[in-house]
Image (cartoon, helix red, strand yellow):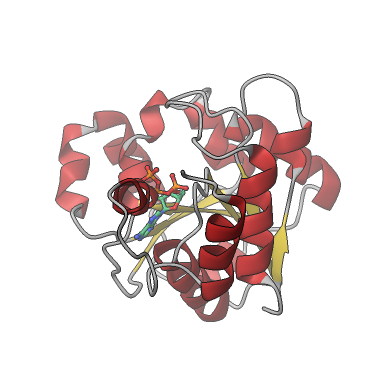
Length: 212
Ligand code: ATP
């Protein structure tokens, strides 16, 4: 099973990395592909340049077995639609291989605004990690998502292994109230971000003056 974790990673932080590792282990993934977003369709452009976000991400995952940085969205022109990313992964890995799109609960709750969102669950399973500040009850405000969860919720990872796509699994992970925007705010205020990001990421930010 292949995990796909998209994000702007502006910068990558422990709120991404620890849940990612926990999902990698608990779901027994073959690999977890971190896919930095090229041009986010739904939000402001990232503050850091793509090459800096990539350098930080590579430094953050270096040495972790199974963690792969996947640059396809940076190489593709136009807006970075996840549906196109999943389609290209599906083409690469074939129709039978389970693909798991990993999302924080905040991202999942916004899924209906994504380009061709209903297609996402045809291309991959959706694995939703809990994130501080968001509760599954918020789903009640999203009838389309609610319907998807009602019809497709899986009870355990075994159900994901039995099909290439189409199930939704909610997973408990260590809840870390860390966000990239919070880190950028700290940096703008001249504060120290040590212990929120891997030391190698902190060093790259300082050496390249990425958020100055
Ligand atoms: P920003 O604060 O700039 O919006 P972010 O910290 O949310 O950024 P992104 O790169 O936009 O990070 O997020 C990518 C993915 O990581 C999303 O699916 C998001 O839900 C998830 N994620 C980010 N931070 C956490 C966290 N602390 N806990 C769980 N999931 C997270």
